Length: 345
Image (cartoon, rainbow, N blue to C red):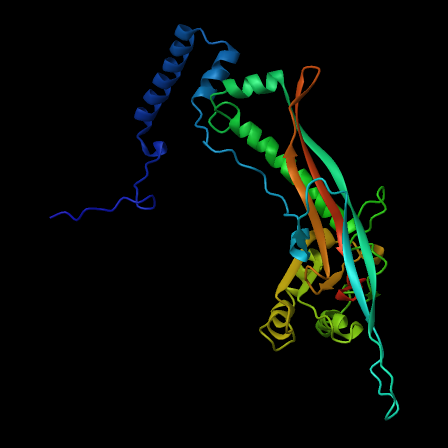
């Protein structure tokens, strides 16, 4: 009894035309050429028609593939809070408790007074517009195409344009978080002068594994030191090019752990490490940086009160414009000692 063969892709038998006898191969080649010429004559193919015919023989993958880009990272650093769409600013009330804990002279008929200084931190909510456009020809052509990746009814073309619009809107928020807006007088994480910042002792181009590990430990511990342990690091971000260095460098000559692995397992309290391409070259002299934060809504946050609210379709001449409005604040740093930056990596 013959045992059946399970025909997977790997088990299929293949045959090369070159394995045919030479006289058979010659006949096939001649007949194939004659068949092609006769078909072209009967169908009266021009060059363009031949290209169209070839195109119709192509199988189109039925899904539109979008090119991959680095994801924007600002949401990993800070909490996003909401506010009513029409508000023009957000106000944070901050109470500073005052009073000395001292005892009065024994028998004194006096009180030690506790009080508070109430201050307000006010952040502007900015408005930005983003839009996509369609020309008459773009829309008509997209709806007429037989390619399933962009048809039917231009749905996937609109999807691709919307993906571009969403990414641009996220890019605006990402830039606002890191660098603020000079036009609006707003600073971000990397240029806020209230954030404690220092340079590492040895640039990482020449630093040893011990030097790099000490820089990471010092950065993580600095938030606790500068705040008398009021705050502690739970989020650490590092330039992605420098993260690649510690992710490939052994903790020591006899260790099977990388520096990254050691940090993940030995620095208490850190629940998030961000290898961030948007930090590359952001330190002094285009160096890398380490950012440590105590991530909490009451320490720092961003406000997004409207995210891509669609407006009425507009027409600019023969062009169709689909506009959207977004409203957001910059990065609101409420407790400056909850952040620390080490640079010159």
